[in-house]
Image (cartoon, rainbow, N blue to C red; front, side):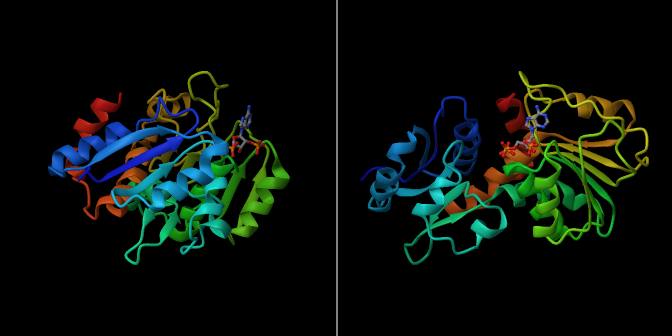
Length: 269
Ligand code: ATR
């Protein structure tokens, strides 16, 4: 019999870091299974899910660009990700054999924040796109205080805040970040090849946390500014590994060994 397997699907897919992350945990745990990268074109997505549903060795998949929204048509939405985050990044076989879509981005984002007390505290988020939705959903779950949402498209950002029941206001991306316990970049600004994100962090209190979901480069301009101010920082690799950990458990039924994150990060850099 063939080995059980999970995979990441996307178009393009060659640069995905998911095979390295899941492969590291499979090896660490001695699980006899594979994790692959599979190139799936948009027009091939329906056939992909039909085939995998019939494949007893398939444990599930991570779903990346451009399939995160389209994949919702092919999975059972048992966790209501369509109305919350609006996209699925992980599909897996549920206990009763159903093909279920979930979204591990919000949990992956929230995991490193568990070491801080953010309840009722003001937060600033930059970005109201797909990643911004997962971030705001997670922040609503944590019960943060008012949210200042910086976005180029202010109308879209205002609608998003109210859809998550978050108090606060949407503003165009401004240089000066208001006093906040947490600042999150949920755009691709600052990523290699993208425009920079230049923000003035001088109004932040000394115990503020600055979180960038971008992981290439690992130290973005925003995180460099946080370091210059001596603030706590969380980089994009933490979210990347965090969302993968939640998916891994769904695929293989085992919690991955997070004590070895340092080693894993070295492999990913
Ligand atoms: P993702 O899934 O990465 O969030 P997305 O849904 O396309 O991708 O969202 C991109 C986010 O980055 C949005 O918040 C977008 O702002 P708009 O909603 O105003 O479009 C923001 N963004 C992308 N490029 C930008 C740029 N050059 N300047 C400012 N904001 C930008």
